[in-house]
Image (cartoon, rainbow, N blue to C red; front, side, top):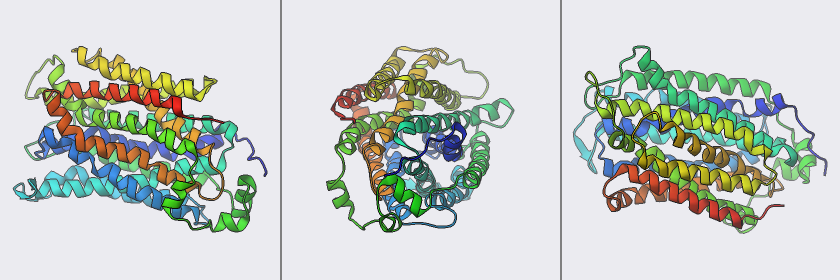
Length: 441
């Protein structure tokens, strides 16, 4: 089997650059969905249910995209056609979602306690996450396809850096636009202009970044791919069709042990995305002036804190490759994140909150880079995309489980959304313990 040649830094950069734009879209969704649905009338105790749709769509879409792209060979590449189509769809939905309250839909309850406006918002969220997943997964697959084992940790760290740089931009958009004078308040049932125009700007950057990657990256043709991955050309062109159940039965042990770590980590971050707005609204001593409420101020501050988390992730992503042991870096990263989550309960100053969210960023950087490094190093053959798509279920299932349990746990902790971040910290500690079960080469 031929060794995939080492690539220059800029070649690795170009493979993942489009991830910058995709992550802006994902960051806008993560930081603003709770406040959008709160504005549309959602109850805090049912808020976590709105977060079931994104991971559910990811769990359905990504194995399908992985399997289809394994069998797709075009003049434009193997994975690139899917990321381009996903990006175009995401742009369209990003222009619709924040306008759910402005389309003249009914605000009366019409189904399962939901208004027409909220139902439109839910469907927009579903299609947005579907399109983001279509665009996101090919970047992970291209690293698995085109980068050798020696450089994979570096490649995924570059991807983590770009991902968090995109998050930084996405999280800060509403705050910066508000600072520049864009209106941050809106009538009941409407979304503020600062959020709406942030989604517009994010969609424009997304499509430009994806165009850059499609222009700069040339994927391996079937002959080269087969030589580099130790398979026959025919298997590379048309991988043997196997059911997902059969693929799971043959999956390496790293698939399952890293998946267990993922379960605790992604459940923790689902609670961060869902409850940070409410947690800091109730737990921080805000200085309120003018017509803004504590919730209005906290809404934009969530974006700032998530941006701080992204800064921590960018910095830590450059530290991770310096560890000699992947497992040691994984454990330390998750424990730092746990300390960040738990400490938020005891902090009542909005600026001191920067410290715990920097620590949370360390866990996030590790979650973006290390699981895929550990898994792709354990995979061979022509089903790389299918396995990475199935592995995405270890991201989606814990979020669905956490969303279903969110309201119950919130009741158990006295309806304190700040305590939900402590729960997130405990989950990261459990994830760090499970890293010990992972076997590496």
